[in-house]
Image 1: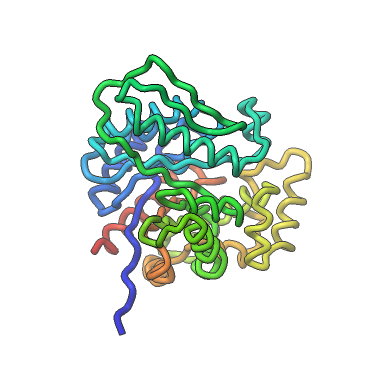
Image 2: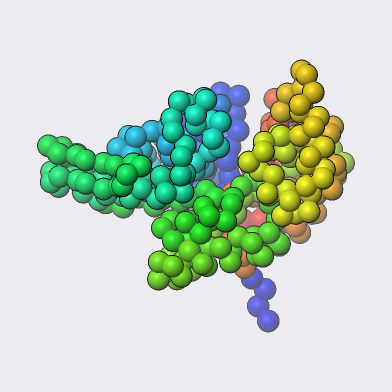
Length: 346
């Protein structure tokens, strides 16, 4: 019996500034990471991805994720095309909806019917990328998000289709990723069991709806990976991210699916205390939550746990622990993760 191979390993580099982040991206590429992922929170995902594209030569460059509704579909498509040009055809456009408060209060955009809005956004982006060099009118989308372009021609796009991956945690969005996405990107908190028992069936349902096969979809699982010679220290460093997400109501179903609703509720209660910030919740996190939802431990322990994704995912997006940690701790954690990627390289 043949043992399934470990998924390809991607990495989301960290840096206190873009120079440090791109340097980490180069090290990850040299270590064997097949994709470098740029997040959108403290920085713009597309600008960060552009910096990574200019600093590297072989790894794919993806956004994980760019917020789909805070840009117009045309701007989103233009950024995807620019990234594809900068990276010499290595771009992957990872889109996500974000949560209601982020969209409506931070960005001032509508969040109604997010699944349908995302479907229409992807249709618009793909139509523009495919046809922007023709000079012909482009019409796409629907009642929530529409594209109506006339009198426009973009010279010399590199590709007429840039892969669009959709980030999804809930069942509706996950089915949508299976139905229309070139790939699915998982949340950094999760487990192989959740991927196998909950996510993959939803992706298969979406594929079946569209008459597609598993070969039409790249499954990109994600994992917060904390490596340290002392397993207790590895667990402590990973706990900050668990506390951060436990404070967000949107992710309650993810904790419930892992039978962690009660400890997640206690973290949320701690967050409601005056003066407590989301990045300071590591101490309120039950160690069982961190062990269930992250990959933490010694290098050997982490390498062994990553084999749980073999045969389930095509690629694994690794993020180092960052929440509630000092820059020194994050740099040390990042170095340990890059060493692990180098050791696991085929």
